[in-house]
Image (cartoon, rainbow, N blue to C red; front, side, top):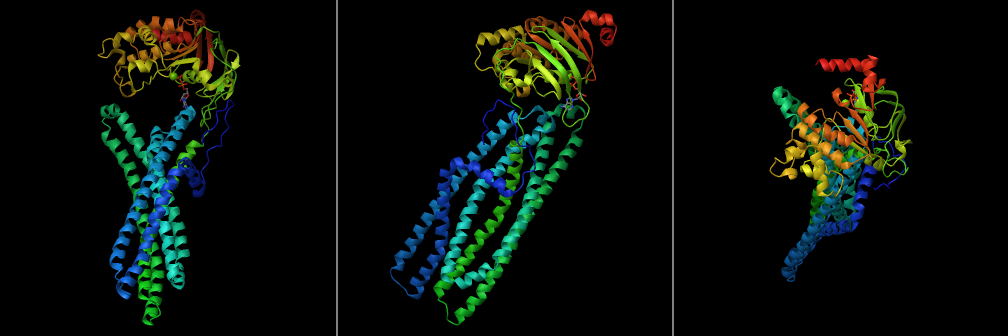
Length: 593
Ligand SMILES: Nc1ncnc2c1ncn2[C@@H]1O[C@H](COP(=O)(O)OP(=O)(O)O)[C@@H](O)[C@H]1O
Ligand SMILES: [Mg+2]
């Protein structure tokens, strides 16, 4: 389901608990629709398999008639050849019925993954704040695979065995409809049992998927936090945490396996009542010479052959319920509202006039506002410094500019227009952002600098690298700018990562620049080094700079002092010092240190 790109804010249905297995299954089948041709080949194969399987019962009738009851020399050839033909057809059906649904299943996995991935890219920052990354990953790997199971193996069983069942029942009906009615008395009881069992299957499956998310989460935390674990010697505690989720996962699986294992024998027991009734009546008929032996043996063979498909059909319902539970958790995410995509106010390159008008902001799920009625403006090209204690709301303030979050009240204006009126992409193109915790991708330094900018001439990348003093360390590496930085940039030091991020911002050449403690990971030496690079970068751009070292903010055109989400002072460095207020106090505190 592709959503048409819409300039206006998208209003999507709120995610609620997805109800009804049928609704989910039908939606899942929607993913099969593009491959219905392939799938049809598979179904034909399954039908061929089912019919030839059932034909075996028919074969037995003629085998017994021609070989024993009315010996016929033709049977010497006809029977073995017939058997071979039957099995060649059965084998072809088996191949078609296995390969094509399998192929379709992988397509479905791919579509589901790509839909999920596309959705992940569109989900608002607030979603990421609450959802664990591990759960998002396990949804994409584990849950999606489970869904595929239902669209391949389960569908195969469902169709093949249902067809076999029907074909066998029809043949049995032809042989003796009275007997078949006896067999069918068990049917309502079986279908009721199946409903009860299915409900359990679904409940257990949902539990397993959630616990799979827990397993991934704890494992991921421990892998990423290995240094912290080592230095705090928290291995034992961490193992305990893992054992707990691991055990919970095992126990949930255990319940499901138990339910699966018990369901089939129970259903077969019920079916056996029908079987026993037929046997009793049939034996009486044979005793009274009322029934022919060939038909009777064929009938018994068909009835015994019924048991296999019946067993698999009962088992498959477990898989289907697992898939429904998995699909439900996937669709739940797909139905979540995306980030509002903004309006259609044209914006090629902003001048860079930035203003907050009565901006208040509260994080979703909390009551206390983090920003309260903020008012300020920055003229294009000027630098605004934001100063305040940790937790006062500085990062939150600047994150409203690229619309990571939207103001709960008031508006953030760019060039005199509410930022929500620009298309989100246009708005974000105007902003370069360097934060405290720089994330680099597992790629080369060069590609990390040019990230998201498409094809950039090598000279421009190198110029940016030089300006941000990346060249200083890159030139000493064996492959220079083409050296891979490792997972999350782990092969570089914090300061080196930050310099790469600064080079990225220089290359982006956006009219608005946000530096959120961008130089915090640099030692004073390197910081002094890149001061001139930053001065170069800041020149001619509207800059919001948050810095814990006040020396970097002294040059700003205006300084805002924030306390508990309020602007308590504003002015230039000299003005604020003269005021002898919060800023002067902060400044002196740092100076003493
Ligand atoms: N994603 C979030 N969800 C809820 N509260 C948050 C979130 N991010 C930050 N906060 C809270 O908002 C307040 C301001 O945080 P922040 O803007 O990061 O402060 P600063 O950058 O000035 O240190 C803090 O009290 C913090 O706990
Ligand atoms: Mg911060």
